[in-house]
Length: 54
Image (cartoon, rainbow, N blue to C red; front, side):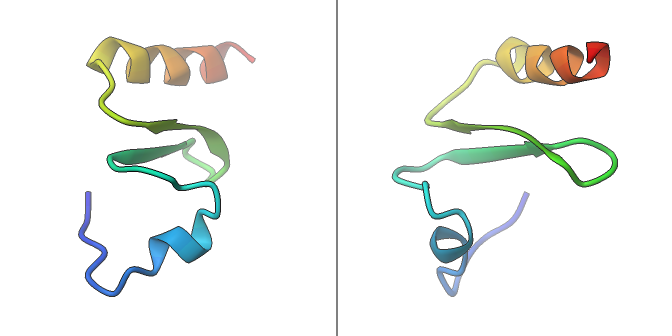
């Protein structure tokens, strides 16, 4: 969780079009997926579970 007071993130995540914008990473720092807009906790957990099964 953080706050982008200097608006750095839109330049880093070029596909960012709206907030909230969630970028999920695994323990090694690899991008799993991104979500825009509100998401249910179950949706986020499912994304991590899919990655663990790969």
